[in-house]
Amino acid sequence: MIDQGLVLRCRARLIDVAKKRSRIPYSDLAKYLRVANQSVGLYLNAIYKDEIAVGRPDLTLVAVYADTGYGRYNSRGRQPQSIEVDPKNPSDVRAYAAELNKVYAERWT
Image (cartoon, rainbow, N blue to C red; front, side, top):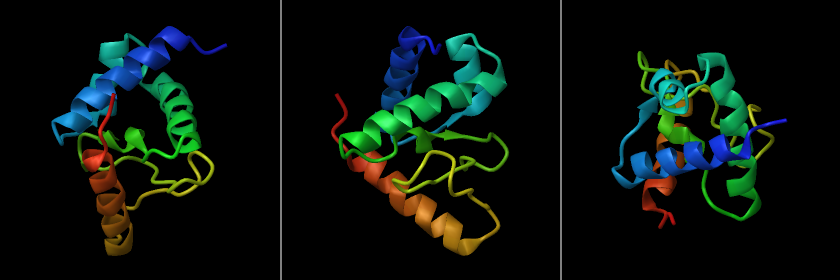
């Protein structure tokens, strides 16, 4: 069972990052949540599903790999983790930037 308190804490952190029009490395997010790096995806998937279900953009896009500045997935409203991002593919980079701009433009509460 996923810890809903950690989901809420993770979402709040992602919102803080989005409001600053910034990004947060997965490793920093894991440290913030005090979970293993591999566990971050559980919380991000829950947040993704919640945000997409109510018509908001993919808040989880602000969580990225430190070395590339991109997240692993940009599922664009589809099933979580359904579309991987290849930072070397210009089409993926453009799509990621477009979705990230929607996140930045959202009025998060």
